Image 1 (cartoon, rainbow, N blue to C red):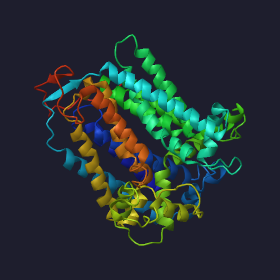
Image 2: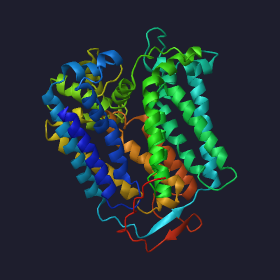
Image 3: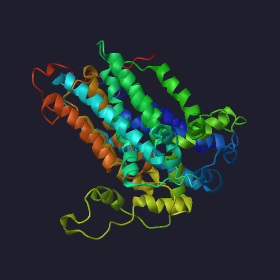
Image 4: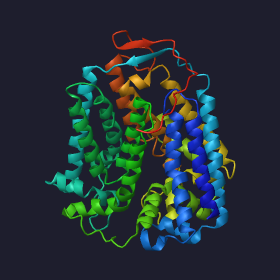
Length: 477
């Protein structure tokens, strides 16, 4: 219980630091970092420790995921304390890296970037192409019935032995593109945030695209990610912490994460009433939801418990980048070493053929450099957020809706390792495609690839902005 209490204090400290920082707008890149660090590690650890260690909830009764077993049965207090210490050190190191890369940024000369009609048409066209691909994906699962196939996507995602869907290059690549579709779709919310007669069209298309993507991915997490990104977007645009919006997201997250899996599975029969959890208490639902979203913490706990190899010194991150180079180029013919995700899958699940089970963010820090890894890896990660901040420094994001959403999406992409610990899911074709699509839309809008200056017809210069004056946070709605 003491560890859970300290995690709660760490949560309060992170929130307090975020509210007290000087920043150019309500949510900057470090805000994105803090939110996803809390969501993936600190808050789930707080809930799990306070609930399970005190006996208020029983993991065996509510969880069918083996990682709960590591937490409840096998993890020792020493390992939990190491992760607690690692969480605090990692956040401090992330802050140090960000502040180093983002120091002395000049926000005194910025531009407001509007969006051309061609960009809107391109967003609609590309979104419709992705939608068509989702139906093609569904048709590969159930030939002749693409909608029925989409309803079974959750079984494809889980490699369900009953259905035993064949993974072909076509459906595997389209399924991987669901991440791109999701992050591309959320840009439409920014397009709807203008006083135009067509604004409702973009909002409706955004909702349709996001729901279609969530169905095709067979996952509940995309809806939460969109909710968080939209919340931060609204906060920046209104310059207020919309507390009631955040409360609604948190309120919806518990049933979404707890009941969502069963609902997605039962949708294949258009029957969602019988999901077999009517006797589960609200606290047990909250604990399960925390475990589902806090897999990074549970995986890290399992890594400290079960990893038996030596220090890896960050080579896994290097190989994640190098694997983007096709075999045979530059005279390199030998296959790459086994991905760390497959290694961690073997020791976490006991089944080397199971679905990817990453080592977790803090777990990867530990196996890279025991103890000092909590400082080294997050330091470079924090620098990455600072570099994104530098990339958007010339844009007045509060008055450039499309680029504000792109800025938040970029922050989410950089924050993705907080969920897994590995760069395997960052340096992948779907993420590269996401970045390329943004630059394509940016090029259509400005006729240039850089985020620097723009022509007078495309932007309005903003001068004499005091970079040292922070946005004053305002509570309420």
